[in-house]
Image (cartoon, rainbow, N blue to C red):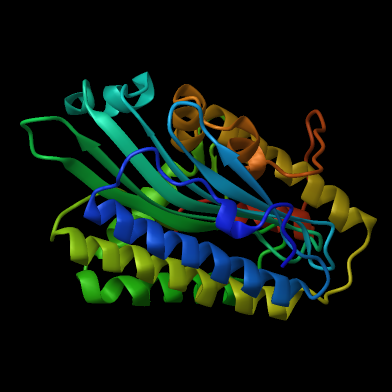
Length: 316
């Protein structure tokens, strides 16, 4: 893996992190390394380049971008560990008890935009948040998940994706997969289009029930689950031949990804309101995209069939 700056120059926190945050940071840094190595192997051509950055208000991160690969047109894998003394409005509106607390947030986020329209776009995020105030118990939670956005879906791929998600959730409770799948379907929903962003997956937030060790284990399992769910799909579909028609449809549908991330995504809003690094926050956007007024796919076409997948449904 090629880096613009060596990995060991990644910024250290501006204060000593509590033990829980240090544990999460160690895992996330290693997880980013493993993700990048496996994606480079799957692409077989391009390598990630690293941009290490610091945040004036506290903390920093390392953003890694792979561009113009044999398989991935753009893949971004970002690690961040940021902190501050004042919560942004988007957070206190959701959790008013956070007002007046110093906070730290750690996470790894990934968005992949493949070149081949038969390979789905995907997103994964695992994160940890902690807020502290003298004389009060710390407030902490985990969040994250993964979702899949195909352009030419294969039902077997979608069932595989959800089977991995269901199996990783099983040790944590019989209802966990159903709850987090439903949350994903509802969260990644474009109300103004009346369609889901893709075929869903898992989404969870505010996770603290069961204690730190149990929640931390779930984070790790979600991370590994993403690898187990996505890479086999890439291997099966990356060599399918495609024409300009499929490519143009892919670029058109990428517009929906842009619409969701800029209109609805809470992570994007939190990052921008908290003074986050704009380039890293917006790495989720596709490198190429097109819009077309009033587009309607030809009835019965492969493009028209996508609509059948953009409604919440049981896949396993």
